[in-house]
Each structure stands twice: as C-alpha cells, then as structure tokens.
Amino acid sequence: MEKLIAVVQARTGSSRLPNKVMKEICGKPMLLLMLERLQRAEKIDEIVVATTTEKSDDIIVDLAEKNNFQYFRGSELDCLDRHYQAGEKFGADFIAKITSDCPLIDPVIVDRVLDFYIKNSNKYDYVSNAHPPSYPDGLDIEVFSMSSLKKAWKEAKEKNEREHTTTYIWSHPKMFRLGNVEMPGKKSLFMQERWTVDYPEDFEFVKTIYENLYKEGRIFLMDEILKFLSKRKDIWEINHHLSIHNSVH
Image 1 (cartoon, one colour):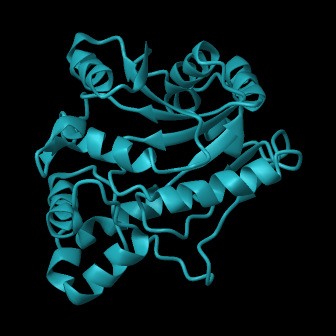
Image 2 (tube, rainbow, N blue to C red):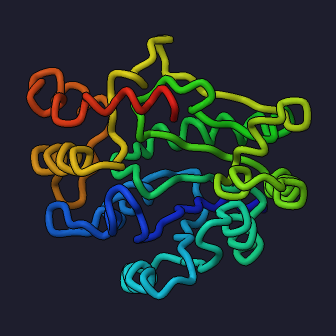
C-alpha cells in the first residue's frame, strides 16, 4: 500500500512575524488549529511536522508530542533536505507539502488536489493548486512523488532551490510532469483574498475570522469564510492592502 504523508514545515524564526506559528487564536496555538483542520483531510495517511534542530523550535516539538503528531527535525534553511529526510524517515511514497502559515487550510480542497494526483499519478510527478494560483492565498497545497523529490534533492544546487522545497521541480517542466488544479468556475480569487500569515495584519485578519466562525470540533470551509467576508468588508480590509505581495508569491 502506497503511503501519502503531509509534511507541514514549521519554525519559530520568522523575520516578519516572530513565533507566529505559536501565537494563540481562540486559546490554541495557530499551528495546532491548522493541524486540526488538516486532520480532516481523508487522503492523508500521516501528518508530520517538519521543524528545525534549533533550540528555539523545541516548543514546536513539544506541541507535536502533546497532540500526538509525528515530527521531524532537520536543516533550518535547506527545506528541500528537511522534506526529503522527513519523507525517508516516515517511509513516504508521496508527499503533500503544506506551510504552517496557512491556518485556514481547507481539508476539502486538500483532498480535491490529492485525489486528482492519486488518480493521475501515472501522468504527473507534481500537482498543486498554485501554478497558476486561483484559490485564496493561504489554501496552497502541493503533492509530489518521493522519487521526484529525491531527484530534486540530488540535483538542486542554487540557494533558492534548497530554501524552497519544490522550486527545482516546478521550474523544470521538461524534467518533471506538472499538473495544476484550478478553482471550479475558472475565476481566480488569489489576488482578492489573502488568508496566509506573514505580517501582523494577516494574523489579526485570521484571528478575527476564527473568533467569528470557530467552534470546537467543527471545521469551517472556504465557502463559509467567503460568505462571511462578503458581509464584513471591514474584516476583509484588515490585510487586503498586503495582497500586492501576491504578485511576487
């Protein structure tokens, strides 16, 4: 049986918003809220939190252990190596890559992308919903074979190819077979909806969303968030001015 693991890369050393993954929303660390959402995805066999060997990231390991999530500790800056080593340790055939600054990750969308990849894994080495992006920024999911990751791990030499796990893969379309899942309806919301957390305003936006929609044991999805924001433009505007950053995402 082939194994698909989700690797969530997380560290405390963010320059723009330090320790953001551990900042609390509704009484829980942001990272834990994200992991709870990811647990609802049915196509994932195992979730692994991939953090660094830095002492400052002991707190992430503690969170993983207390909440029964697997974890891996590796290079702080070579994220390609961190993902590869995590995949090796946990016997992955396929890896779904998700970053920890996406606390509104939608398990239904995750499953949609993973299901497309699983059904077409003989046609594609890499599938995402981000090349080109059409979903709100912060609902990104990438999935690829361990064999493709190994090839990238062996051959990637440039600094940005090591710092960003999949850059080598999606920037070599002649070497890897690339697929993309677009949002139904063909309308892109990427430039209109910023749901990722990089800056204090992003955190305030996500925190406000949770304070209005979150209930213990219940997951609110993309459509519910969009419906809520359509009635509360004041909340949408908290971080919308940062959406210009999407153009260089």
